[in-house]
Image (cartoon, rainbow, N blue to C red; front, top):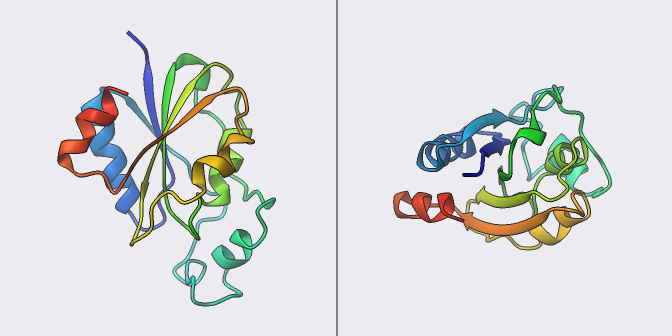
Length: 153
């Protein structure tokens, strides 16, 4: 039996709620990806081109610092990585997380929350951050019936 981890970044709480449900369904451990400097409501105002989230997402090489790197990734075979969709991709803090650990030989299953878009180019943009892992698109805005399917991936 493989060991599973659900790692997630949540800006508003929606992704956190989804991550907890997935962790329960998969019998997985839970790990929150936290920014070193928490995002404020003003930082997340995507309508303001000068907001923190807007400037970060306009520079795909930007890597916001994470609060810690104490996840024991080596102990897991499968890592679910969850995030809100920002500008049709994962927030760059997800790249920071993936680049902070060795995911060689691991299966990474993505899940996301979104106000209306799909994964877009999220998987494509994350593959270079964990080049030796298998990255699989899971589900955007999973419903109750989807959690068991995700758990079995």
